[in-house]
Image 1 (cartoon, helix red, strand yellow):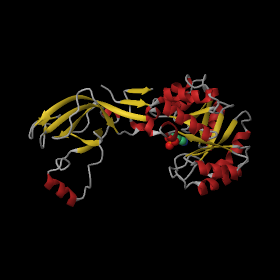
Image 2 (tube, helix red, strand yellow):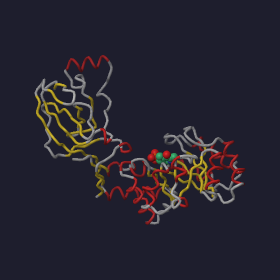
Image 3 (spheres, rainbow, N blue to C red):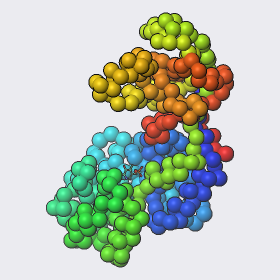
Image 4 (cartoon, rainbow, N blue to C red):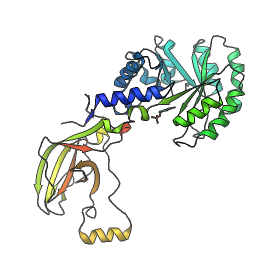
Length: 356
Ligand SMILES: *Cc1c(COP(=O)(O)O)cnc(C)c1O
């Protein structure tokens, strides 16, 4: 009935443990749909890592709205990655959580504003990177000691750098940014970073021995061993069709004989249309058309595969189910059979996550 994520628990936990062991200072990131696992489950797993003495003293969430989901399941510090702003969820923070939260501050004016509201707030100052998402310029970072001088109870927990996804090409940028950090007249000793490879971290640790580097890791932690994960849908119905038979919301007609398969998983789960099959050039389209290929009939590749082959949508996915076209000659699965689905984990809402 459902779109399921089945996790080989032993293998998944062993990956979580070994990556954490191999990554000193690791800060697990639990945000959004919890990378497919749900935020609550990731918070419990972060606690499980902490309980094993692996030094997981901080869990990062994406937004202030996500804090309640993790706070009762994980006991350590909670770093909010979205910078604090003087509006919305950031200023509605549950006072019972305030002392566990580490705020990210990306504008000098927000630092004064936040500390005016919570004088002993713990903050990480974000320096902007080539990503240009959030963060202060060097000049702005250097202006913060003046603001902090008015708030002696403030607890500065370091600087944050959010780097683009360019594995292996960060070092020169980080070194430039570190110059700005070193030149800031604050006792900064921790740098919270993302998307640095293990060898880059090693180089930085050697170059800046007075600093602790804390990598914030989501994808490589939770989704780092794809072999431990399997996504399946269930065949809910099978209908034999002849060429010319009508089907679906739009009453298309079957271009040739085969089967319409109804499988679980639709737009509500995040199942979307894939790119059209094959080469889209006019010449190749003409060639496919001449062969009477199904993509020429307007069928689009789906993320569902049967017998190792990605199958075509008979029409765009429905809300909770999808219709596939299986050409004559292919093995026809039975109602109740499971089929594999290729998904983007960070954009998929599974009906069930089963961890063995
Ligand atoms: C999401 C996020 C991360 C983790 O990113 P992954 O690619 O999932 O490891 C780290 N830092 C910040 C600021 C983020 O928003």
